[in-house]
Length: 219
Image (cartoon, rainbow, N blue to C red; front, side):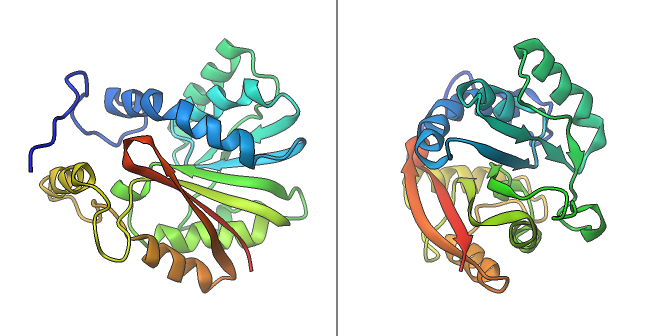
């Protein structure tokens, strides 16, 4: 199996402010945006979990001026970067970032303050533990409106199998780093975990670069 790695791709580094994350974010943002234009409501509130440097939320926001975007992350050190990107783009519909740590329930917002039409998560599962899915599902149950959606983007296995040779090569590359919990996760595992909290998979959408958007909602 010979899979060509793009010549301009930096070394894999999941830190939110790394050159690799910026490269990957710019590569996938337009295909994601195209899908979000179909998924997002006309008006309402959108929460991004694990916003990192804020690249995606600040890219999407100008395309949806009628929506209010809420960035969040567990790492408070990235907040200034998120706000800097917002201010540079003059995104009046992007709020100040808030802390949400998916493994610390005490950081999860009070649903009495705001419910969301959409929660989205981009590119975390290949370098995050599967247990994070439990936190995402619980946050979704807590903060989504009854007809709201949870959209999760990234590369995944399906039924224990790779969907493409390039995803298999990518998984082997990140597994070679021998970092605990790195590696592609299986859609069925995410589905099973989410189901424990009343969050069910509604759609699996194919995107370029052999990635998916998994669309969940309340049962």
